[in-house]
Structure formats: structure tokens, C-alpha cells
Amino acid sequence: MPDFCAAYRCSNSRSIKTRSRGITFHLFPKNRERRQQWEAAVRREGFVASERTLLCSEHFRPEDFDRTGQTVRLRDGVVPTLFSSPAHLQTLEASRNTSCSTDELPLDLSKKRPESDILPKHQDAAEVQSTDHSYALPTSPEALYAKLKEATDRVRKLEREKSIALARERRARKNCLIFVIREDCHTDMHDVINKTNP
Image (cartoon, rainbow, N blue to C red):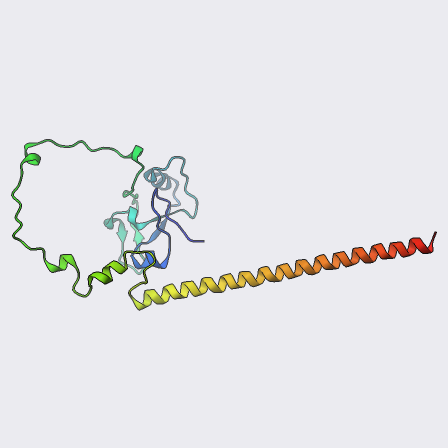
């Protein structure tokens, strides 16, 4: 069963796709106080984390991670802070009406945006657009191979489950048939005994 992020409106699940995007998943702390801090940060009414409840890395700031080793770890004492809360939980920031914010600054349109801001040199528009959709194939051969391996593993698992179910059905039919034959034999034998002993 896939692991899903427990945050409100977050649909990230542990998969090759999220791994290729650099998203990591982190279990809630075992320490009760820190776990309660995380549960409060999630801001879901009545939410209690289990032993396997996860949050994805999108709910932590970049400085919250220790990326020095082979695995990405959270630093000690870190609490998740980046959430998309429901409308009734969001706090509105007061708008500022100062002379600085209302003064208009001249806009210089003569400067061109550098090409690197628009598209990287090794990508074209069609390549960028192809990754916008969930059904698009990965661009790297490694990611494509991983996706293919995941699909073939799933097919093998489903075929195995199907053959087990068919074998179970055959056994049930055989047992049912044996039961019916025994009942018929028992009834026939009972009739023969009754006829011979009037």
C-alpha cells in the first residue's frame, strides 16, 4: 500500500514520480512532545498521527534538512511550517497603506529577460510541456526504466493473485461437488437400508 502525505490538500504519495522530483517522506517523531507539535502544525481537527503517518518534504523549509549524507534527514527539533490550510484556518494579513507602498516606481521595459530565465538551453518548449501532465512519460531513460519495472511488477503481482483466486475457486467447486456426491450416496444408502428392512 502506498504511503501518502498526511497534510491537508497534499496529494503526494511515495512513488518513483515523487522521488524523481526530489520529494522525500518523513515519519512523525516518536517523542510525544515533538509529535504533538507536528500534529498541531498540520492543523487538522481531531488528527492523531499513527506510527506510519508521514509528511512530505514540501512542508519543510530547505534549511530544515540535513543533506550531507546519502539519505536526506530532518535536523533535530524541526517542525513543519509550510501548509495550505483550509480557508477558515487561514489568517489574513493586514494590508499596509504607507506612502512607500502607494508610490509608483518607474518600470524599465528596455531590459530584456535573459534566455536562461525563459527556457534552459538544452530544453525546448515541447519538452517542457510534455512533463506538465501526469500521463507523460519521464524524459530520462532511468526514470522510464523504473516506471516500466514498477508496471511489470504490478502486472506480475496481479497475475499471481488471479491464479491464486482461480485455484481457490477450483478447490471450492471440487469440495462442493464432493459434498453433493456424499449427500446423494448417503441418501441412496439410507433408501436401500429402508427398503431391505421394512
